Image 1 (cartoon, each protein chain N blue to C red):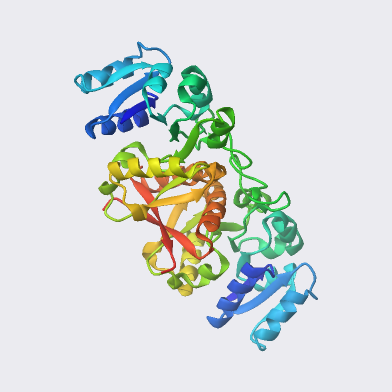
Image 2: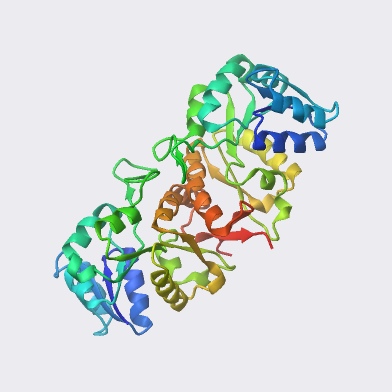
Length: 218
Length: 218
């Protein structure tokens, strides 16, 4: 599949690399086409992937991934351009975390709104699916690195888009029973607010290599 | 143990009932000693428990439980009185949920603060332990009603108080491996913010009878 990954940080690199390994045709987008992290990633991919601006990546992909920093996501998507985004599925894996005031980080939007909802409102023709933001970058693409089943969530207004997202998660190694649909894009509030607990757990456990499993009555 | 349970709602009743069943000497406290829900509960306990004001319950208990509505918790504890609270362990199981604007509920405090922290600041001599607020009332006292292990969290500044809380959780049926210390009372932010995801999951699953299990690397 042609996939555009917006963002060159740890999450963007982890996702784009896995997608290339899976045989997808990936363009990693950055603010500047000359972005050094993107160039370093492209070199590692040995000709199997391309880089460009946010607009280049968005134009290329039939499915898009927002892996930009949460505080810059709307600006990045504005640069990508509505014409390149409209009608497409956008996996929003970003978190609106603010580390500027030290630890623990806070959220720049929460409680009565969320980044997922902000993106959906700003780009009503885009099929936004909030997913994967609840786990760290390596777990996103290596779910089997934990010894037991655990859960990943989908929130979005378009059921077909959520199915497309689930199909990609399964390519990453997530199992059907691990993929939990939590409802409309409004459920991004909970998926993003979970980061506040995630940060405390990371501190208590001393590792980001953990996740939660949904346990239901039998 | 002498235990004071502040609050007469579903959570207060579930916890107080279980504590009586376990043989504890319980006083359920309400704003008014004549509270009808408390009286109905006392009648069901057939002389094995007592009721009174918040101050009566707080004075009685060597360990206390805040099961009041989050929006009224500080006021309830003010009525209980610092003299009756100071030096004691207070399990804070309340959530600062606001349903006044319809669904989904929002939090009256979150992100940069939490109810757990507000209580600890208002009563610095009280050993506040945030716990059990992440599951519904029946799961609090019937953890084995789910088919697999799942997790419950402790946040607080006093390690002995967290041990006392863990001991009580074990009496309820929680297993050692299920009880996760997430750090200081500041971690209440994450434990309370988790409710935003809990509410979405309850809607998606159609039942409040679920929980999360922490899954770590082996």
